[in-house]
Length: 463
View: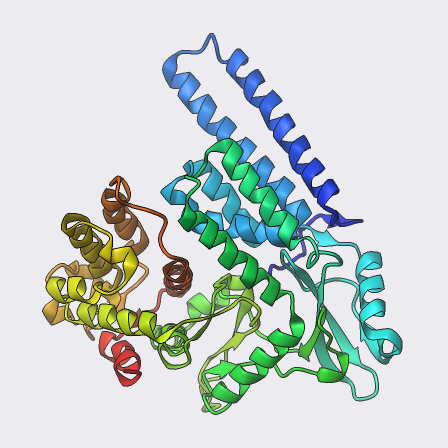
């Protein structure tokens, strides 16, 4: 969840289908007027001046649209966040850049509205808590406030769902699909319909806080003996299906400047832990948290004499996705092919999955090359002559921050995406890809380095 110290405050939340549709319609009309005005005012500029003017204008208008979506919150923002990560396949760069701001730039909801929601959820128990009106975090579906249980003095956090957003999910999805249809932003295909159905199911699950409480407790049990991670404990007496009460866990954001002063070894350990839990979620538990937003993590550092490692605090277990054994088997084979940087093994691993089987040999070959780049950090340097030498340090560890991995993947993938055979990737791969992109960014910000042998052990041991 995003820090809210510089965010605007909303006095109300538009949750009815009519209000939300009206807001989008007004925003679209305003954008149309601005586009028309920009076209007329640029008539007497030369091409270079016009191109620069148009680029700046597109950036401003894309940010305006993102700001308007941010005011609506709810699943419209969630869908926007998804498009920010995958829209670079089919949307202008200015739009995807602006949509990225939806991850951490949503307005806060005023205390009076939140207070009424808390009283509605807690009943008489509301008076057992001393709640800070200033939120410590905001997101598209909820807001977080720090509180104290007055009887015990225990510090907790309250994740309170915005009123009405759960009921607006289906209309939001319909609205967003209509916007895509009108703008022709993406092809209207069966794969896109399946993608939206998956998002719909995921969002309905995410607003069910009873389910999130269960998942949080499940991960707490799994990780309670691994001191690299901290999972908050659920406080059941103050939790409902629209309110989650958890222990307060202190830490700093992943982007905090203090983390850059940690030794390389400590940053490496944090990076290794980041990838380790991702691989455990996919290959051991078959259950993955799909939202890699930095706001869902904190880092707790320790004095080196304490004997404790620096720890990753896992804050959010709402956006979960389970994977079937067939997909996990294919994913394991893809990872192991990447470990040995074996093109033929990579192509063989792709067999048996409809998305790949429907490709021609040429496109499948190109996709295998994309996967070879994507699995570069997991490959043995001695088996991968394609790894740039400067990305492997003297200990044989991979330098994530210097890799430009995402850019290289997208450059290579664009060849396959331009093929007439290419369709929207299956939703399962979309979620896994999203998670790996988040981990890549996490390690890049930390400037962490990882050992491919240690990483691949998690995958191999899960077979």
